[in-house]
Length: 440
Ligand code: TYD
Ligand code: MG
Image (cartoon, rainbow, N blue to C red; front, side, top):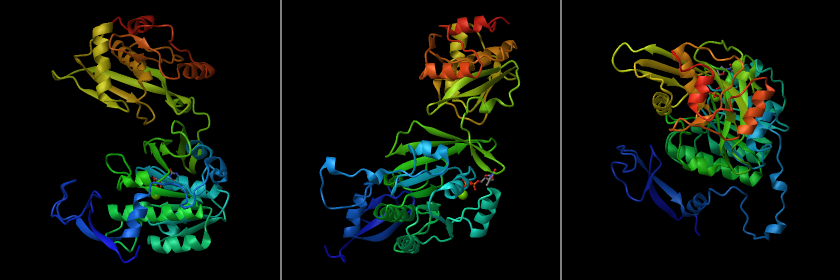
């Protein structure tokens, strides 16, 4: 097909929606005056449609049994928690998107990976100058000679360099700062993010270079940019955590080369991120035994983590009681308060309730239900629980205690660390009675 043939499309700068005709307002996102005209060569358009494909492009067909497996030979990222999340290391030619809030430690993590990586690393930064990166590297005591820095944002120029040098690993920090000069919109716009990522992805596949793209996160908590970005890449990782706390959790939400149940646990310290190899009691170091404090477990991938739930109750000043939860779903808290009232006779309707999951974690695991109930009961009766007690269990609407996912593994870890669990109780009422949490 002749290269000169091209189609004209209008793309919304805000949401990335495509139209065949210009219109004043994007009917997808409702923004005015955001449609920009693009002429997309027909050949490119075809490429775009196949952009979700993750292998190198070849027109030769072959039998499945003859396909050589060596392309999947992984290389270690150097940081074992990263390898763990990736499913055993970096696959050549794979594109990894690393998302996370600003300041959470993405650049720090990638600098540490770059330092440990077995091979040449090209670190392209559109956010920081080489001097700033050097400062970070000094803080991390990095002396590796395999890291090349490049402060550049033009993907065409970057592509030319990669084609010439073929690094062992390419880091793009961040994809929102990159732009392709063939498209007239500004860096960070959806069109630029998409086109730059596509360009880098194709190059990665052809040259077999693994790439990590850093992505910023929107208020809604997803990587900023068109949805196509997540479809385009092979692996989507998120680095999460509360900036006020040390713990960082690396999670995969998509992985074409491994499963997404495994998570990486890291701790941000003075000299960068360290691996929390054996997390168990990691979060409990500052625990003070008091009424309203209860231990429970959450699963991070296949590893149980002991966490502390704290509750505080005070009589409401105004008629309407306040409920505040940090790290825990407010609706779930309201549900548990209703169960406590109806099934265990603990009425908190005239109390303000504050609930906190220690360590800056956001807990969704239903296994903490029983611990939340016990913490509330313990707080309102001012009765502390035994220090070495760890409560595991989901609470049903009938006030029954249910077994939870990976119960055996949790119990094993709890016992291993020298704590006791509460497995013998079938009902919330029994559990609370066992620790005298129902009498006032
Ligand atoms: P950074 O990696 O720049 O975050 P991101 O790239 O995700 O925006 O990390 C920034 C934060 O991490 C900053 O607030 C300082 C802190 N930090 C440490 O606590 N210890 C360290 O060794 C380093 C390098 C950074
Ligand atoms: Mg950064």
